[in-house]
Length: 278
Image 1 (spheres, rainbow, N blue to C red):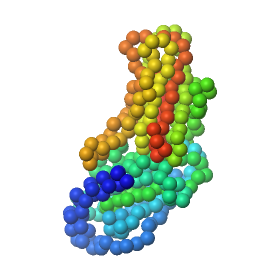
Image 2 (cartoon, rainbow, N blue to C red):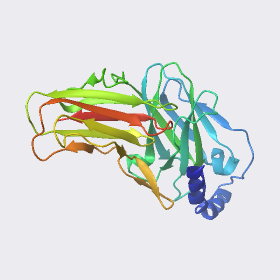
Image 3 (cartoon, rainbow, N blue to C red):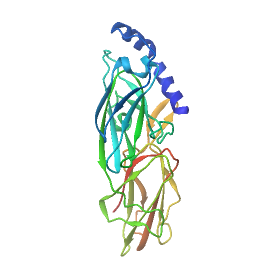
Image 4 (cartoon, rainbow, N blue to C red):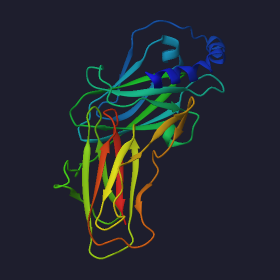
């Protein structure tokens, strides 16, 4: 996997210093079975110590979660390494109950970063289903989970598009990984007015969004809203957690009903997004 290769290539840059530090505090690489932990229904903190991290054991940690409600799980990664001056890095991926099917694209985390896009991740989960989060880390890391309940109002077809009200609140929708998703929304302008449509993604992969409106120039071609990506071996944030304008005319647009289609670009896109118009 391309991302996995990039992570370990990045990790290799820290290996010599880490080996020296690990030897100082008495950690000796060993072969053990994959460790398991649990977030229960979606709350709590799991700590992977220096001697339990993937670099030392050569294996992965799996954290089970079985939510009691539909919504999204937010993970926050914090440094838990005992090595002076060292900040743990790693990669996390959401899997199904069998741990054989990836439901998300992998995310690289960096506990030295103060930016949420590099120290947190969100997954869209369904109630009463069992999931596993696979974590590969270099150095100790503390992972905190918080489940937020969301009831999707989304509809799968334009004909049955869900109505969203005007204003900053808009709508919050969950994207479940492992399958293609298409969400339709609509709103109506009773008279010509200025219009701005925005989306804020918190997803593991890109979303493709289209706005359809009456009158010339009031529709958009399908546009991909990217969240994260690579420039060389470095992870960059494009739109994760940022409000992104989809349609924002300088003048007034025609009155009538407007439709917004949001769909996943691949089956490993999961998380949630906020959509609003004003």
